[in-house]
Image 1 (spheres, rainbow, N blue to C red):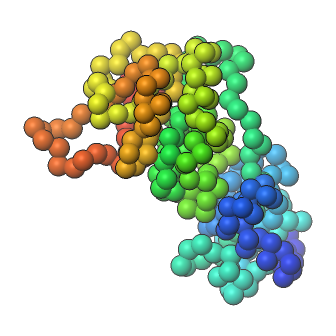
Image 2 (cartoon, helix red, strand yellow; image 1 turned 60 degrees about the vertical axis):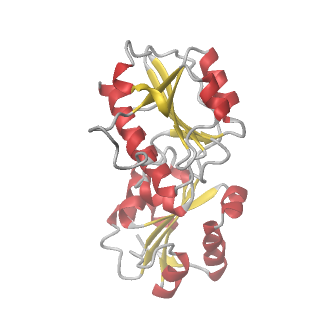
Length: 263
């Protein structure tokens, strides 16, 4: 592997990927950190999904995973790392990748059991990334995001999902309730997390094909989607009175995903 210096033109181009309009316009995203970039490279759907690997001079040994991509590896200086980084302390390893092709989930094979997770205006990047990674762990088939959900290629989402962006089909829709209705017409039951729902342990028998909806951190699931739900479920608290108003969105998603897949 003989990396070459990154040109100023490419540096300016890649730095712009911190802005959503440029990510969307180019169909690219920027990933940062050794673990995240390595995991993305290990799970590339196609080799051309990797555009460039940017490694700080002197860090090549720690980035030995980059050897198969020699023609796409570039050396960057510490100053250039500071321009590329979205964190206060850069690890000196960056990757520029193509975004997943935009395609909806289609249940053509009609699996006997299937789980999809849908995010209704979840706005915290850490929550979205953590939910995506958790969905992968529990074998979800897809993640669907409303137009009000934070960009899945936001740098904080990319970091928090720790390189799992290529291991799950995920896509955004303008009208989430319409996409959920489409899935209901092909046999999916809509399960919505709600403080007004039944104890989630009472969901029996469990439907074979489920869309689990997680709502906005402050306002929960929208009224339109709540109205079309097949089941409203809640996670009960211990004791007579809860010490907090609600659980974090990603924690709720993890508990419900575990019960729906392993319970």
